[in-house]
Image (tube, rainbow, N blue to C red; front, side, top):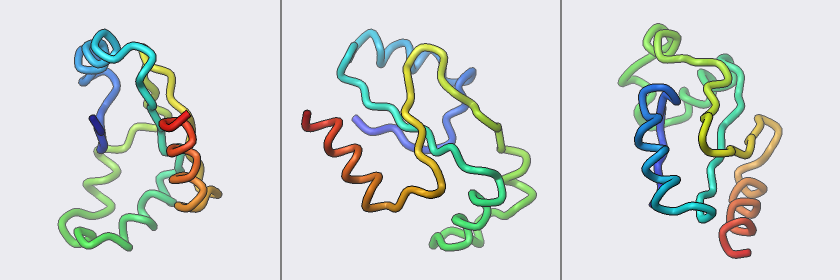
Length: 94
């Protein structure tokens, strides 16, 4: 199962508790720890970049919205997509 998106920690706490209960140690969670400015810049490269913009993103933005029940690994702006994919595959296949 892959969950991706803007999943506010407090809104989805019960979902994450259920996942933890179901999968235990078999959870690989990653948090894009990016500044708002970097997030906005990356949004401009996406096919849906015109569906919503900076004003909407500012309303949705939550700095450091970490989960309380599941440990997340931090993905930062200086990591390339290749590094991230390699890292995740190494975790999952270990």
